[in-house]
Length: 443
Image 1: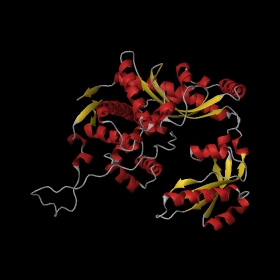
Image 2 (image 1 turned 120 degrees about the horizontal axis):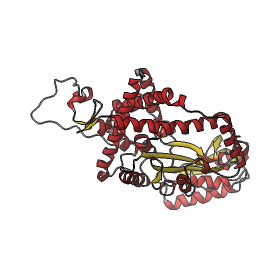
Image 3 (image 1 turned 30 degrees about the vertical axis):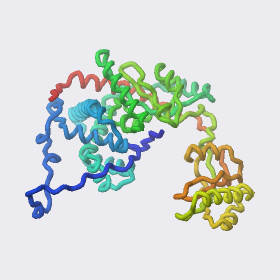
Image 4 (image 1 turned 135 degrees about the horizontal axis):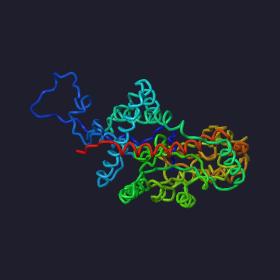
């Protein structure tokens, strides 16, 4: 499972199909060149769901934000869960209003150009131009206005924390050096690349929050995007990057969290995503993305030099003919004696050769990664592929293990990590106080 937002969003599945246009009996629209949708420009024409210190959250705001979650999940979703998700989205929108209001009260303004720039970067993460991304959002039931509002809230809150919280946080050089010493002492121990979703809770709300967290876990284990849920619902500072907490050791985590993370196994949502965990101030959901050893060489970081021999198959190729070609390809490549004869062997088979001199072992599909990790220089994988894609063989031409050497702890990185943890803790308290003092009128 991958959460690396890896930009702001995980790469989504195809957008849901658009509804077909339907004629309206008895009305002729042929003379209307274009129309303006009032609901987009005048929120007061939509039904208010909550009023936060005078600012309105409408049902359309909730629907469009909920559509972002659905889009990131490839359109998957349980209709029975939709009412509960709406409540969670409404809570996150209330927090967003409070954050933007707090920014405004501190004379913090986010320029439109800054929002547009961030929006363009999100579109790039979706591998679309801004106009293509706008169409994708509208097809999914959302809108550029919805995601720009979320971007504005994140930028505004980040600016508030930078001005009001970060100056109050102190990290001493001796604390940083102590953690570096501990990292060096822990060389060879396990280190975890994790994602987090944090939901705040009071003693009174804890049962409901735990129930909400349980439903999120069920959705993610069923194939929903951890990144999308983290971005929309997590109250940790990592929400903007899809919950990515980076590489940590068990000793750096809350005791309750550490005890669970060490039992997770990456690669499958069923084993990589934790059950809800009670932590101070709320509930955490953890996802294990990768696992390695502190300051130890990671063989998955090795750079490989590969040649790929590709043998296309005609559309009329039968299963029996395909099996015969597999045997022929395997016999030829297993006995060719290394990459030097790859081009010659390919010509004899009517195949093509492609070269890649810098691919990391970890970037290969899991099945190939296991095979390539056990190959010696000059050896080839068994043939793989399909009738549609043709047959392929990878030949290992070289392996650079110098890339796997782990870097020593960096003072600035450790300082930033400790500082972020403390800012995050104070930010939660800050938002809790804003909620406590807010006047929220639910409709």
